[in-house]
Image (cartoon, rainbow, N blue to C red; front, side, top):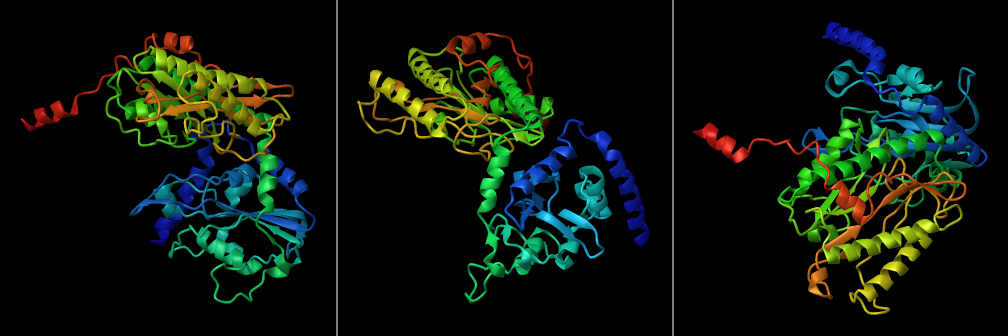
Length: 489
């Protein structure tokens, strides 16, 4: 057994050296992540340390886990994509027992030849140094005994815990244990403790300060980040374009979702920025409708499609609403063009210095006036036909960290909508019409750049695109019922 483990470890070491050839070469560089840590360090308060933990592994069912997704803050600062890890960033230089000076430490899951055979390659401590450029990187088992005198810091900044991390009893250094060890080191006051006499060290625990620190950092994108976002947005727009050409009455919502996501994979987008929303007819009135289960969309319906590709960690957020049969009805066109008008009015004020709430206020004023003119509401009437705000940051999260006032370098959305469910208190001809138009923008020095303009927005652009032939027109799979009947006979 020892010989087998040794052989596996040797093969795994060669595999780690070769893995770069198996991966895309256009990820953010280790220098990007290092520069982000330096920027954070500059902004930290005097005599402080910031502590970050990787995302937990999430169980899907039984012995199957969800595909792992790193905590965006952790990835932003490290480039590390694996679980069971912790990062310490110090404001000032520290001195190790051997006299080495350092200002950051990354604790990572160790190499394990058997586990890597099942679940994939790991960097380990040495790989983390070689690939990610950390000078101080240790296996996570070292954290428990690593002597950091947290009592000497005026501030220990970290995000508070949600108690949603499972313990792996076979691993004494997993994320559950890393958090428990950290809590013991800083004398974290457990909220459900029987005794209230336990006080944190010097009362120096700061569980709020990192929210503002990371919002300031992540809200303004670097050139490299903007390039990633451009790719995510372009991929997402091309998904919308292909669906416009391919959609036909009788398709299922899930089939339409599949066309979008096939385009994402074709362009090497690793993931979705959020669960895909594909709602036909009244399903579009459910703002975060992710069932996408309607087996056959009707030729008389609109279909609302809110999807975003995640490319190398960065996500787009694009919504288009189109007529299933390729032609807007008179009522659908009136609602659509009202939403489009609201969006374009908000675009006029999109520039540095504009509070995010003003884009919502602008859209709401346009939509309310329009709904009155169409006889759907009375003047001053409160309603739920437009129940959400319209602008948020995008980046490593679909609702990314950032400030409440637009700055040069922000990447944001504008997404007004109107949703009129069946049995609404208006003329029946409006029932089941749901429209949202969402685009992504880069805030520039004097205004904005419309990142998602290649996805048709106007009625004419959409109807013209829907007349174009599709690469999916001749993609026909066997009928399962007929296939199974044939096999049984």
